[in-house]
Image 1 (cartoon, rainbow, N blue to C red):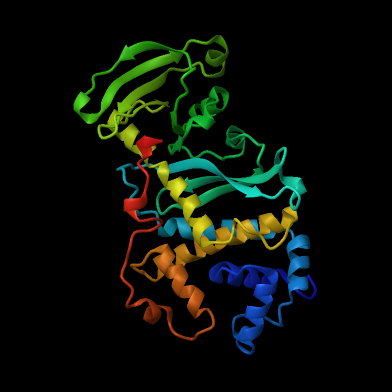
Image 2: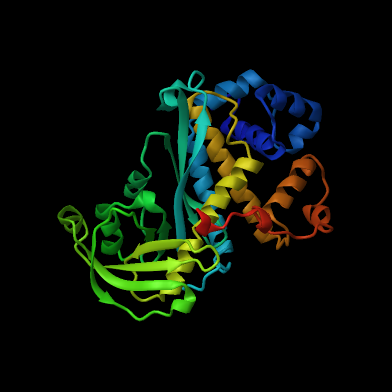
Length: 357
């Protein structure tokens, strides 16, 4: 593209993400204050808010989606040996969505309810390193379960989901593709017990059964047996019932796998708190998707830097340091050498208990 290129746009939007700029005017003023340093950061000319606004509306958002996927492909091998909170040989993914609310009068294309607009960010998170591997942005009306049609399943991998993804025709595709799922079942699902397996009540497992679907429509959609596990959290007394097509893992491991689903909720909370995906610099659909995908690429870039430089700091700490040193020549290792490590995402004392939901 002539003039203001996609690279110029990307640099300006990444600057806005890292420094949490409030508006296009804010971006223009802060970049203008840097003067001669802009050239050393890769900017070829002064960034004007009207030019950036036009680029957000006209430069196709899929350019930045593809670039984010390239970064994801770089980041995932770096975190291949990361612990997941549960001992597994295969890959473990968590699938969920988050809703980003809009003012309907400013975003009429994102109709959600009668007086409310919204988009959904459907995300498949690789729990080794909490790297998003699949993101699909839709309007708020799209049901979560529809995203299962778009995911390319990995043979042998385990996918953990909540009740919103209970659709037996789609879940049967996991079995056909030699992939596994762990999903919390709904109360109205009709099941017939075939076998009961031995359990240890001291672990919190109340039942471990092989079942079949007794409803004719559901049985036609999923004709194979399923495994039903009933688990009670010993601290809260909350009972949860899981369905899975994995018959080899212990029942306690299945319960631990579902507990790891909370990591995708923490991912949504982190990016909403520390990146700009709740307030937008443009109102068009292209501008919104561009900003979300650039925010995702910033998250993955921080993950790559953290692992390649072997930094013992959290994503949040690294992001904060980068926001202050973007235009400095201080080596990043020197800037980070006196920072003490802390847990990623949120402090554990503020984290909700999964089994209280």
